Length: 469
Image 1 (cartoon, rainbow, N blue to C red):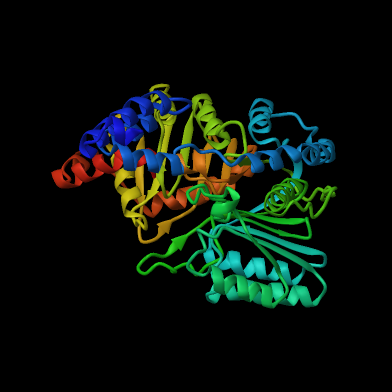
Image 2: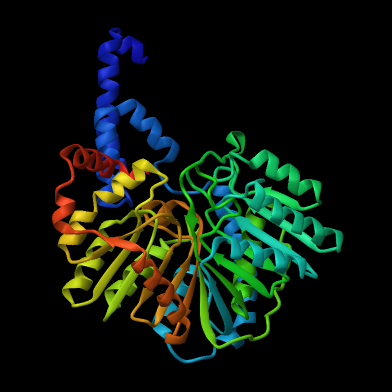
């Protein structure tokens, strides 16, 4: 019919382009930020057919219906977990923050935890192997990137020793993050008897078509009493040529480990429809830190990490320090930081001078000028890729986890963060952050303006497409 109406294919294609432009002008802005709307419409106006196909593939951060149904099936599981945790949550303080985290992430705050921050890459892996070697019941690992290199093999060997002792071992690996090593890692894990699954695998015929929506969480759990959360993957720290990663991981004991276990079991169920443990036991109190887990991602109704971060910035009174390797802020976050500075709050932003993703880094750099002009102090960490993701606010609240401060972590990736409350809990992170500042170069406003025009043009182009990155 289309050919009968438009026998001239050129005319027909032109009409099709305008139909797409007009139609997508109505569709794209629905439930989308102004920045993302502009980027998508710019692409579609210039390249209507490719842009529409690209939008159909990755335009809406939603999981398929079957996954939403599985997540809804977890309601009773989460209710049982929250009922188990309630006795550990009866402590005054930080009620507003804890209530918001619970509403967006589903987990309550719990007291009685011990938290050890480890910012040495090799020390994290060595400590994890020791804990696996001490496991008696089960080891559960959820990770974005698991390689069968030297570091990964150390962990695989420890899991093999655990299996030979009769310990159950389960591993969830993101297949996109681990694509370079996936076949070898999976074979090595299965060879030692570890039950292994892919998180969010690509299956065209089963409605799993979104390669850009990833499970970016890092959780390592031993016997339900020891948990690790942070930014570190299981891979050699220098797996990229010329780039050495610097990370931060929290090793945790106490009741909050039950929340970490719940997050792993939920993700395992979403991929397998198997609940490994119907009732999660409450770990004994082991310290005096009040903590709360904040899982976030497209399974949840709103952008939990971004919502909490922006709200806390608006509530800050003295000092905010944000550490992130990838910075692509949305308008809400930019506005919150500008407003905080106007209120007299000192805002420090630590980013990495070493870049492993060039286009993202160019987009990130495009925000520096307006942040500096707003009074935000930007520090570029030398020598290493500072891959750590953490925030401290007013010496009273800390966030440590897998979430970057970018649109991908806000909207697309499954992430997990550990929220810590109280000056004693936050002080160790602040000490580490002071080390970041000492190892960083401040971005000087005058010098930054002197960068070449070509750099500025490239950064601005990258910024235009940043909501699509």
